[in-house]
Amino acid sequence: MGNYFTPEKETASREQIKEWQTTGLVDAVKRVYDNVPYYRKKMEEKGVTPDDIRSLDDLSKLPFLTKDDLREAYPYGLMARPLSDCVRIQSTSGTTGRRVVAFYTMNDIRLWEECCARALVAAGGTKDDVVHVSYGYGLFTGGPGLNGGSHMLGSLTLPMSSGNTDRQIQFMTDLGSTIICCTPSYAAYLAESIHERGLRDKIKLKAGIFGAEAWTEEMRHDIEQALGIKAYDIYGLTEISGPGVSFECEEQNGMHINEDYFIAEIIDPKTGEVLPEGEKGELVFTSFAKEAFPLIRYRTKDICILTREKCSCGRTFVKMTKPLGRSDDMLIVKGVNVFPSQIETVLLNHGYAANYQIVVDRVNNSDTIEVRVEMTPEMFSDEIGKIRTLEKELVNGLKSMLGIYATVRLVAPKSITRSEGKAVRVIDKRNLYKG
Image (tube, rainbow, N blue to C red; front, side, top):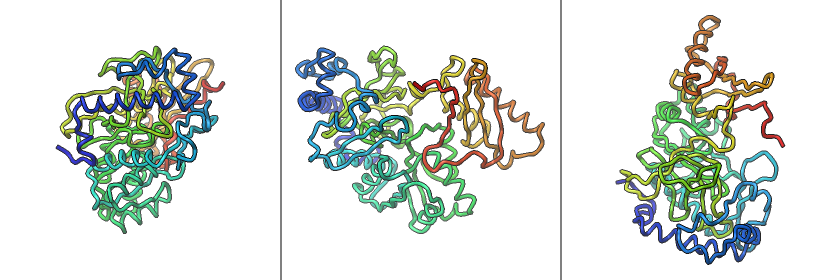
């Protein structure tokens, strides 16, 4: 049995969880129908009224919401409470078109920070810890979410934000940081920088909470070894609240969804049909407990699997796998679905660090895919023959993983730009998605 921040909720019976979700859903649907014309119109188009929603089985009668709806209703069109009740916004880091803005009442922030506190406790956090938050602050949800969760837990909180690696390491050593929260790519970069400075033995970290981008099991093990920590995954999206929608426990095998605040479904991304538990499909969330900005059946575009198998930590909340890719920005190369995580697995299995870039292009109407990979200092050699042999090994490894031929270019150590926020893994030059 593990430690819990809110034991009575995190270990509640299925019946109790269903009761919370049913009451919450019925209430949220009525609230958005009465207060949000945009929602009412969508429900009317589908021929649904709040009276049709009496149990969780009725959820599938409701229309989906997508990021396009959020952009169309921007800025205030999906608010379910008066502006005077709202105390904060957060916004996505998206670069195209109108940004997605989410609104919060004081209670929404409390609920979100509670979810983040649960994630910290699941990673072994207590009020005696020093929580080092290197997610970005400001509009991005990472920093504010974990910052608030750490405060709620009563831990000393270092609001570092991202970047300025020298200062990060100085505070880490001087103040004895024990839990680090950042993106996995920045954690790998910090580990590299700590080793370069010979400060590994001055670091007191015991755990890390890493999210906001995809990462593999291999990358987890690399970070754990490099920093001497346990690395935990956390999941969330601005539209639903931010990090802490789900989190990993000591099993490190899937993330528990905070079902007292969120309802999760898995659908077939093509047909929208709800899939049975255990099937792989697109994750859909209903954030029924939110006051200012509740979203009903929001399509995340993340592909994953839900499981209710009993967890050794004692939590009864459903678990989701790490996102296994995206139903939208997944690469389709030569008709084959390619996920960067597959490529990363091959590289790490061949002894390379997770510093790579995937460049997709179209030459003479045919797709090309090139994987640029940094050599480790030990591999680095000016013998062309030796480099060609290493490249050929990776080409074969990628062919068996992806089923297609990708060219590989090994490049000098540190020649691919390091990211202090989200790593830019994919450069798609084909312009397939431009209007």
